[in-house]
Amino acid sequence: MYSFDFHKRVRYAETDQMGYLYYGNYAYYYEIGRVEMMRSLGLSYQKMEKQLGIMMPVMHLEVRYLRPAFYDDLITIRTTLRKMPTDTIVFHMELFNEAGKLLNGGSVKLCFVDMKTNKRAQIPDTLHKALLPYFQEKK
Image 1 (tube, rainbow, N blue to C red):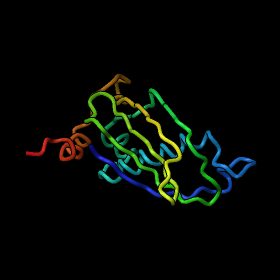
Image 2 (tube, helix red, strand yellow):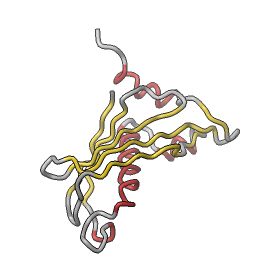
Image 3 (cartoon, one colour):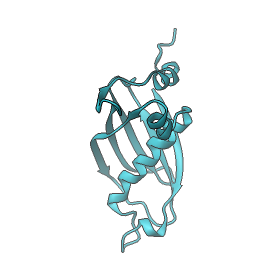
């Protein structure tokens, strides 16, 4: 299992009239978590596309709203991979406020697509190697 935390402050432009983080922006926060997790592994989305020729389109998004986030809250975006990816990758998402209360949870499933053939592909070797230490059984 691999987990990564990233912090983001709720901006005024991301809120609704009530001062809550607008519900549609949670998917945006999930993307921030995914992108920063990949970066923590030494692999950006840009590198995946330009150097490896792999895109990662979203196949499924699931969101659970538990508590609101408010303007100027510092949110912890926790992104977790529970299983080693194969031809798909599932990011499990949790958003916490500064008091450590769970605000939101969900998951995003993506697949790997070869940009030349536009067909599904397996996990790129670079990403597989970066994740392998977190998924090997401890002896």
